[in-house]
Length: 585
Ligand code: MV4
Image 1 (cartoon, helix red, strand yellow):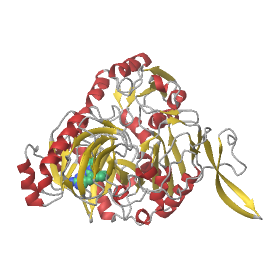
Image 2 (cartoon, protein in one colour; image 1 turned 90 degrees about the horizontal axis):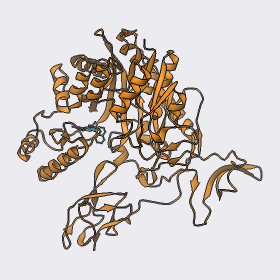
Image 3 (tube, protein in one colour; image 1 turned 90 degrees about the vertical axis):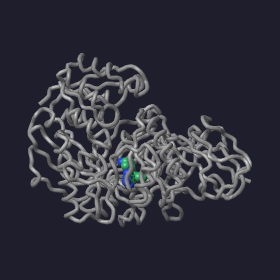
Image 4 (spheres, rainbow, N blue to C red; image 1 turned 180 degrees about the vertical axis):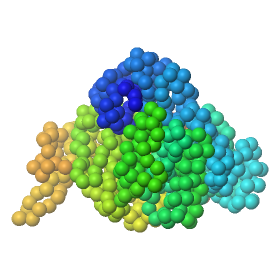
């Protein structure tokens, strides 16, 4: 086993790996950017090295700086966490060539799985089929037309080097093919510097089910159950759970065995995840993630396996200490990602800032993997994940109830968080009855009445006021009320404990004045393309402008039928939230 490991990451995953190392008696080396000088992962590590720079590119993605820290610290292994270099084969090779262990798969396996076409071919080679589609590169619209004629619509156009839904466009019919190819290639080039695309039949209401695999250097590979990640918005997972609810035992086993075949087929070692789409009792291979995932704790909690411990043991050459028959999945676990984002109106706008208060829930079956303490700052430069609430129950309803209890106990001030949206999802009958799919959050869940929950509220008065939820007694009867008090007067929690509990706001509603004809940008972004001209007649719901924001291309649609009276923007223009881009008379 290693005696010293460098963690080439930050935030909650760096803290998670440091904790696992400490429990194994392994010395830990943290690396940090200028903004993370005082960060929790730095405070917990035995040693810490400055990478310099502020942005991820200048620091955590600075190979030379990380290599320098490895050399200076004498670390025998590097754990990449997730994101950053975790799926970068070149980085893995650089570390390995230094004679230092990369705690993850062989670079060759990363290469195979990083290209979605070769990944699909690798799965098909071991008899695991993807969604009906082609691995031929798409170079002209006729190929898509032929595929659509044979398999029907919708068709998914995907980026071969894509991930997380970027570069993926859904084609509803022949008339959309050219625009979709152009948009997919543009987005893929922008995000991955590669514009190769391929196609599949598009499953309209799939569940996103994934299998955790663990392989050692001695030819052993097991699966540690499955997870469902369907509660997501714009490919950002919000809530994950294990096991995936409602799967027949045979299906569960077949997916697990398929995942093991895919892992062994590409020479995989260490922890990895094989993603499937599940619809109407069928499952289709989607892709493989060659890293430890954010949601790994739900698997740990239902299987009793510490995945980071296993990663360290496997990377140091140890064989797996269990076989497939030893794996038992018990109960149900739910993970809620607590992001510093404002879910008001369903917009999930980033809400970086200081964590002025952070009180974590506790109790039976309650775990919080976090990267921050009160007084720390959620930076705009990095992922805004504050931490992950993970709750276990003997069954799924118990796990849901426990997660809701813990969410209401979790208290965060200084930034808006996704907690109100998470509560709305967990309380919703569709989620509780497993009637949701990957599109449900965006297409069904109504978040229009969700308000920000920063625990503070700006008002017209000069002095900002802070909301206090207090319990008061009137004529012997107890009431839970919200009061807004000037920050100075309200600094100390009021008598009722001053807990800020997520509440639904009264009134409010989707902005944009439905049918107003004033088409506004819902968030700050860049105009990619204007699709209409003055004088043109448009239908309600017709796309009038393409806005690049939140790392995705978003269509801005006409909110009524009519004639275009004004086009206020052009391609390349930056717009702010609420700016009018097109006017329909
Ligand atoms: C799909 C799909 C349906 N049909 N492919 C999303 C990102 C990447 N992991 C692949 N993804 C999907 N590929 C076909 N042929 C559905 C997803 C998908 C998804 C799509 C839209 C919105 C949210 C989603 C969440 C998970 C998976």
